[in-house]
Length: 354
Ligand code: NDP
Image 1 (spheres, rainbow, N blue to C red):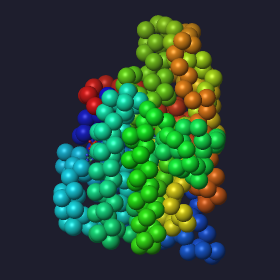
Image 2: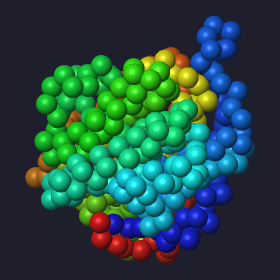
Image 3: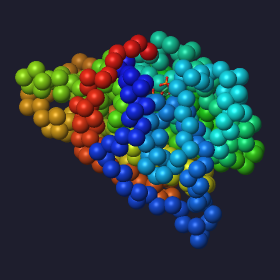
């Protein structure tokens, strides 16, 4: 997988991408309820996984909003699988808010080859964080999962209430079961202790610090790289998998980070929220948009002998929308700035194995 040098990532915490964030997500009205909290900008916030795509976006966004007491530890500094080390860290540091963006993530192949690793590492990481947070009296815990927690054949768009209503997609059930247990742990803490522990389930994410390794990357960064490389070698044809007809939803990671801040600054009334745009595009539309932005003028060849995957995957994010959070970065603008970021960072990525 392509990874970025740690020091470079650190240096880029301050980086604002070309998507200048507008702070148009309004707090929940205080007159009707007590959801919105006036946040002390010095409050100690620990972002677990702050070097990852999601964690680094959350860090940038909190910093841009004036939060000054952010804590991050790399996996080398603090292995979240180690319960004693995590307990010790919480006792010493005493964060007031915890955002869990740390996880063992990977594609179908990795999930399939390492089912125990995906199940157990994710449960260890999240259990250690959740338990230590409860013991250390952490006020707010935000747990991040993904749409794979929902049943394989659930109706579209996916609603939060479909959780645990039917079997999962078998290829990533290991990861999904770990994530479901994290959602349930937060729900149970809410129920038993009345604490504000909440789970956010983002749709497909993209943006700075994404994985551009063609062996393990998601469709959007893979296409950026393929079109870029084909353009650089004289506009060679680009071959893509399937028919191009499946529909997918994409959210810029900076928009997810805004949703995390929204969840942090408001007491959300429920334990589980989907976070998406509510709009999906066909893979063909996505390819043509990326081709146009990259400036590739060659052919697109669709290899219809390759599988299409599920015909549609769209989340119902109306609960978050009703509360007041909405995405701000449309797909075209998001792809433009991500491509720009890719160009600026192409020579700084290195390949390491999972
Ligand atoms: P990344 O792989 O980019 O980042 C994960 C981070 O977790 C890494 O920075 C890593 O730290 C940290 N980590 C992993 N294992 C350990 C460990 N044992 N101890 C300490 N830290 C550890 O993942 P993403 O940012 O993409 O994903 C974060 C979350 O967002 C996940 O829960 C994922 O399910 C969710 N999500 C992601 C989507 C996507 O499209 N990317 C879509 C939907 C949800 P280090 O770098 O220091 O090793």
